[in-house]
Image (cartoon, rainbow, N blue to C red):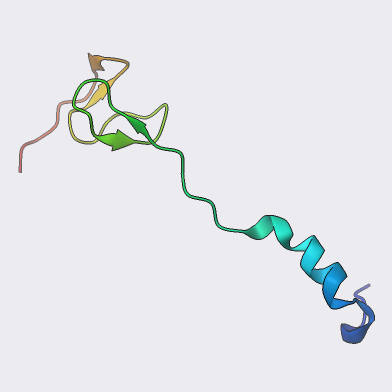
Amino acid sequence: MAVPFRKVSKTRKRTRQAHKAMVAPTMTKCPTCGEMIKPHRVCKKCGSYKKQTVVEVKEA
């Protein structure tokens, strides 16, 4: 059952919520083209993964 609104102190509530802060995503450089990408994903710009072309990218 839920605790009434005023029973939990501000300090206790804020301590519990301390881990909810926003964190920037980890980014790495693509070894082929130098574009910033998330780790362990295919590069959207050149279509390579671990220095091998795995996806053909259409030119705009």
